[in-house]
Amino acid sequence: MVWDRLTDGFEATVVLKVYDRDHNLVDTDKFTTGKDRTFNLGTPDGSGDITEGYKVKFILNAGAYTTPPIEGTA
Image (tube, rainbow, N blue to C red):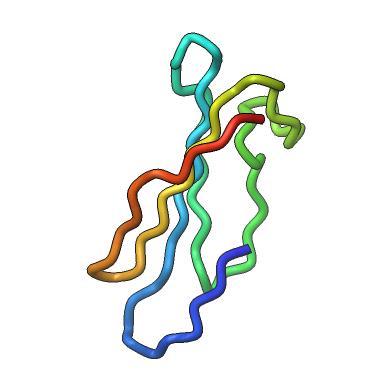
C-alpha cells in the first residue's frame, strides 16, 4: 500500500522489481497513490508468491525525491 499525505501536487509511486537467482528481471509492478489497483505482486504468473531466494527491489519516487533501491531477498 502506498500513502502520500502531502499536498504538493506530486503523486508518490513505488516500483517493485523482482530478480531471479541469476539476476534476471522476472517482474516489475508500479504502485501509485490515489488509485485502487490490483497487481500480481512481483510474480509473472499472478500468484503473488515470490520464489524463495529471489531479490526484491523497491524504489520510491515522490516528486523530486527518489530513493536508492531498497533491496531484500524473498
